[in-house]
Length: 212
Image (cartoon, rainbow, N blue to C red):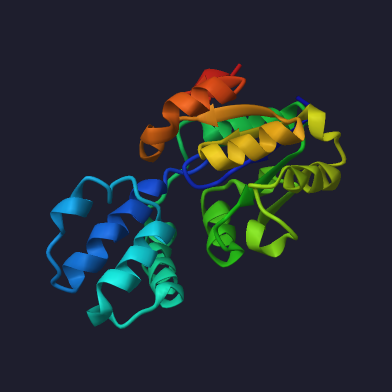
């Protein structure tokens, strides 16, 4: 490994539980009973999927999908500011890579308006060459070319980069680009866990496994 590309949510930071909590909070705060057909899905359903369902199913909320996503960001910003913490061993591992002279970056789907302050609060930003949101790039982590862009910015061949990820779609994109892929376990990725294990070069429960 000559460079490291990190996803943020569910990989470097333990934030996915808060995104999933909002799935329930929006309904409860609007006095809507948790429907039986969604009760088992909401703990692992992405915010984007839930927002689309809510916008279609609950017109009383008065929000379309775009407005619903904005509501998710408004709510999660409170958790980012006060509650979200780094995953075990994450900061120590970044320090270790820094000592080894290995350049690191964060590539997240979360807007930098939220991600930047969180990375600063957790002490992660000083160990990164840069952090970027996929919305700010010409493509995203579905596309192998995204990882070539990250490698170019890190000034390392993409085949010598390692992607740290918890989401299957992004792990597939990184693998197709030629990156080594290390998957970090997250409870919200339970449905894709076996596929992730089959795809990746290494599967870890937390970063403590990688510390010297």
